[in-house]
Image 1 (cartoon, rainbow over the protein chains, first blue to last red):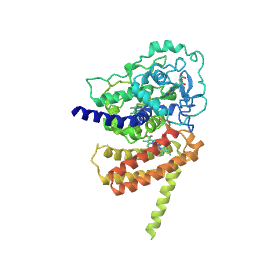
Image 2: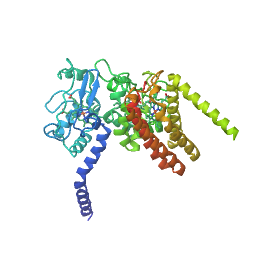
Image 3: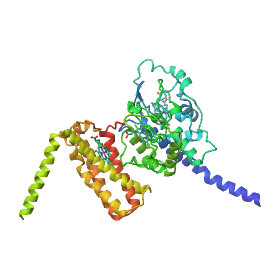
Image 4: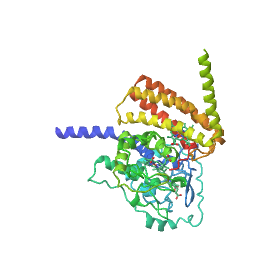
Length: 289
Length: 152
């Protein structure tokens, strides 16, 4: 009898879960896709979503986010799940070519396999575009992809995010969002001469951030960072763009907020804030402050 | 009757004086338009403090701040008129004057949302105020993104 009841429950769960699972994965993928800010870099202003063409200006030249729609010819329609996960985790393209770290795989390497596959599932529900990817405008020697092997050896440590059991679930969720998906450090962390992220000075700001413009120190140092902000302040800023003084951010941070952080749940924003404000304060003056 | 003529005349001189000073000293223009922005900022700050729970919600303060935002929003486009240039330390981008139409549209969007904010504040509904604050913040960010170059 009890065995029969178990069986019934099992069957009921199985039936309920099977058709829902695919949709679930897509819905989760959509959320993670937003958190990862994939849209901005892979969509030209006014262009078709994910069809590529957005210019990304770096000290090494101008890169253009490629077409990552499900188009088989010009997008990633033929990519397997494994190839997709490998691109995010290792910075390697479908043909085995080395990818440039403007594609923030030094952060995306921390995304779990399940989350990466969910992102792909969502992307494949969007309309394909047959727009060819625009070639990067990168001078010698940076145009040699093979050199990236050396770069990776020195500057890239692959590996999925590992939660810190000593910390709260909120902190770990925040750490995962900041380090793996929202890649705050790609803009807010200073880089070494080779464009590698300086982990020891994480989030302490840089004069040469996105589009060669400054990105401020967001470690909790009271003078040069955001040490005077509390968790409410930071969570509210990530929702609205409004800082504790009532000033409103512009530039690419406005885009990050519109496309990414304002679309997260308020629990996730609070988690990001808790994590960022728990980091060691770094004294690092960027610009005026 | 006479008194009010005198007052009107004095007012005219005062206004004229201000206008004259403004035209003569572009550096003051920069300060004046920054003062309009600071007025927006400090009142936005006062409301968001309450929305974040940093200060107790006070409908009267919300109303006063929302009215001040609506009033300052009305001054925004004129404070940037072409003759106000870019003398003195400024975060204003030159594209404001080369694309005045675009700038004026952003200022109009601010005006619209700021007036709505003042209306919402009158009703004293905190959740509605929080929603409208985000709509307002969107208009600030949209203009800053295009026309302000932060020197931080």
